[in-house]
Image (cartoon, rainbow, N blue to C red; front, side):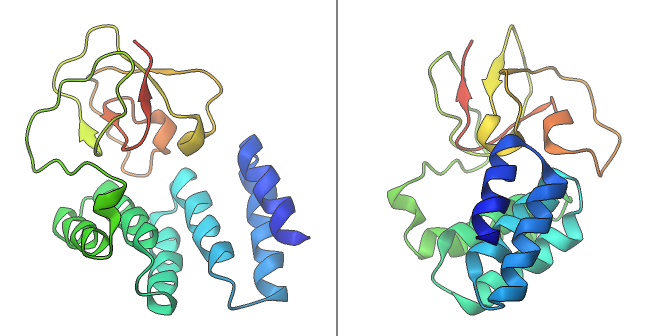
Length: 173
């Protein structure tokens, strides 16, 4: 099964093989939204934001009530600097029931402590010995040490964006 091969590679962080598996799954079943969704996640992980946004736009066009598609597309758009479009996608996700699974943060300040789940994508303002488990998002096997350094490369992969905390990840210390 091509999708299973892509999923296994995705979980290992092998982005090339994951992309090949999901592309093959799409060739076999062009309408399978999960292949599109995971292809978008691969492209987000590898810094190809335009491709990620395109796949996610296709997902939400096919399944307009799929709030996870809006959430991930909002992350892609926010990462690319289009905050207004990102907020619109987050609003769409909330309108479709994401609030049952998420905590919304409206441009406030969030204190992160060991054991917390990061409630939203955040730019870090202060850091003291902060490590966050990002394996599900970035494929990193160890918690990532966070810092305030400015990331100049707009196409830097998520794992290299050490000045950000991502929604759904867990603070280890």
